[in-house]
Image 1 (cartoon, rainbow, N blue to C red):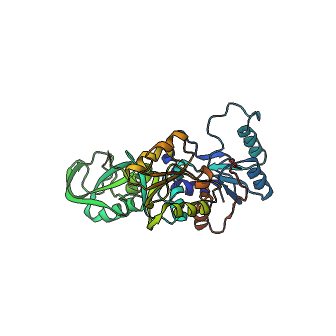
Image 2: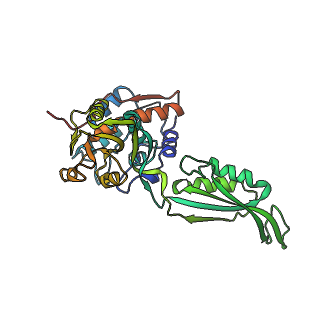
Image 3: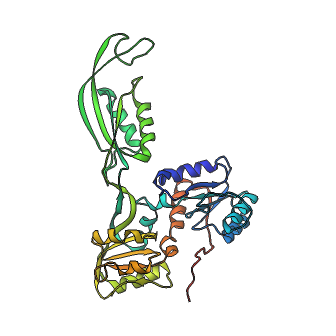
Length: 364
């Protein structure tokens, strides 16, 4: 299998446009044209992970965290990043990262964490804004179903848990074909009136190019008229963090003991008494303390993330329990998520989950 086939699938599942500005997701080392026979999935790229890849004859490492965050001006081995880059290149191992773009989709890192914690009725905590576009086109009545279906199949028309959403209005369009054209209807040099359907639908920005191409391919006209409008609507399928509910109201202490066991956390840090009932839980895998206020204003009884700073624990004391369960611990199931979606797409492809524990944090 070509590496580009794997990358294409991963980038359709979690588009690179959804990564944060500081991030560096995508193919970091290697060529898209490489032939890949076996890949290994990890949370982090470490020396032990590369040794495991070499031993198990894997040509590709798929990691959640990028090995390279900043530009490299040299490859002299002066730090661990340069050493690992050199080692990967010497051993013909490609490295692909799928980081905050996987964090920012509903069925990504946080969706998997919600599943493991047994939460229901989940939704994005802070939905992405300025991510949606309205796409409008006009076509003959007898082609409207074909054009509309092509747009839907390419990713248009999704509003929350509803798909194939559009608004259709019948009207009449005019045009005059000039010399050198081959009009689908009408005659060259004559103004033509055509009964047309105006099709309006909604499209995430990262799918816009694909949807427009599908629309143009399905449309009968030689020159297709269409409009793209920016929208300020929040996109409920992309954004930071998630919030959900427990199946029934539960003692906070009992829930946290369960969380500790599920995440195999050596320690949980929290900011206030846990002798109370909770129902609504917000969460963000990795470093999510920037979402503390959003979680509180969303009515969460408890917020789980990693890398919470000392002063953050003072926020909303006695009103919302803030829990630091660890960066690695809240993201560890990303490996199983990636394995599952890749195996479903490429069932015969040799795929492994790394057995190397890459958590750099130890406690006594």
